[in-house]
Length: 450
Image (cartoon, rainbow, N blue to C red):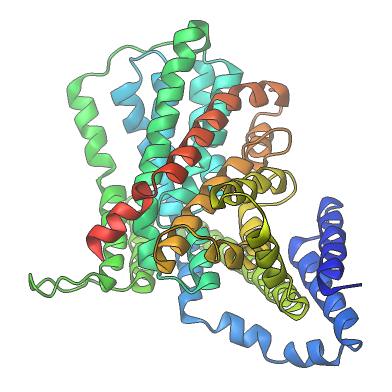
């Protein structure tokens, strides 16, 4: 059996284990360990590697961003920021037909800017917005569909934990990845709002309209969300560390890691002083952050072990050579990779998808003739992969965000959620096509600012 054939067998066994609900980290680590044992004929080399691999992996300074962003999201979720965002957006848009659904998208985008997690955004905003939408007579399909789709903005609107992991895996600049995600993230939010407008035009009974809110109350709402805007602006200021402002004499505020620390501190202080965080909530936020960080790092370790096995079998190089010999254009290869995320979205979360596929896909992409500098290809593909992962999270029949919403409203048949999310999946597919055809949509700001 060749190395590539062995890798295929091990990969299939790993997917089966994940499908049977084995933890992703354990499945990836076990597949890599036993696969390497089969290649080398002994487990000694892998066991020796495990003496230093955990420390070498987790001691990376870049990874310190992860728990800080998670902590910022925990503080934001527990301090009432999500409710303030939705309430303000609803005050401005609620009088329009479908306005609450549009407000939910805007609130998801705002919360995603301080959360960095798709599942957290879908869950938190679902608790806030779903009861209000149902009370106002919105259909179950539209209510759950828009919130499942809006939740995906949590991993696309920077700062994003998934982008940090991708940058670490591919040795890219975190700041550039954040900047590259800004325009696609705003485009996603605009596309979802447009979907709602089209949806209620063809199904007017799916949504109602509330009375127009007085201007004074709407302005008060804007004041209420100023802390969210300020925290996002200052955290994203951390990316200024790599901007060359020397000619204008402007100095960087802080690095991305320092920016994440500032964001966690600011959102925590807001929650304690003006929000509903409380000391019990503070402890719960710290515990949840520690548990989630441990889960992410455990998956990352499993991915490193599996990646070492792939390197032993030289599977990425073999696949790259095989793809290079195909009589198809590079964009067809990219399209096939992106479609695979729709399948993986049925059985795993966004982080697991990225950690599983990037060691295989990235060398292939970097070998394609895409007529761009290597760094731009890496950044562009990272955004494309992130969006494809996002689509996988809401693609029926098993997209994870769909079940988050079903868990929040178990009386709503999941088939209605499937029906409601389909227009948003279509919007995402159009956006992927636009980014494939026009890389400038994700690279324009990077070229301008760096």
